[in-house]
Image (tube, rainbow, N blue to C red):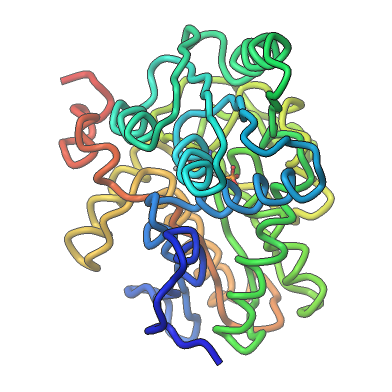
Length: 328
Ligand code: PMP
């Protein structure tokens, strides 16, 4: 039997099995828990897919030993893949749209990743085009494509979802999580749905993001500051499967910023903006359950905090709302 005190063979052994922590100031009779993905060694939820996807690609022979991965990413996926690549003897190239946090790029580079920029306006679709062009020029290169590969959601169906069910003895009423590629929410949803019929699955996007259109809702495209979730190109992420989602809610940058600040000062959670948005949405779902507006099999809401605020200090995450927005 292994215990948490046994030594690991490498840093990759410390990915996953993150803590689940109860949040406070929630309605009486409804518990809200957050899965703290900042406890992964690269500091985010994306360490999970870095390890899982690259190991599977190598096992299947889709990626040759010593080969190269080329991936479009806003940063956390790059850090996760670069971290895995160090111990799996792979090269890593990341195509990053300009404008995302500098801390993430420095960490990707420290882990040995090569960074190629595309203009911010090119977005993830533009970054993918460039990644494919780079991979075409190298015989040993593969684009894992977090936005399209079924291995993304599978990572969470195999790891994050079962960890949540085990920690709560399957007493899960609702899962509330932000959607970037959608892998985290869709993967957890698949495991939870199988074990807990009637559990509510709620996706979270920032105001101004247009994923809601995939669920038949009206959305108005607008810029937003919340980093790591949402899209202006809702068809792009094939991993986001609207059939596994019951509701998709939006959170304003202002509410997100307020919650990021409150989570730090009142609850000791140093988390990035996508965690703030997820927390706002999870609290709203808890209130709906408490008010009897939402029927769930258990009075328990689970959310995911994908990364840490330390990654956004240069972006004024703890400044005033206007400072964070870049307007002061
Ligand atoms: N939050 C942050 C900070 C992220 O980097 C990401 C991934 N882009 C997410 C949330 C969303 O995760 P997923 O891609 O699994 O939907």
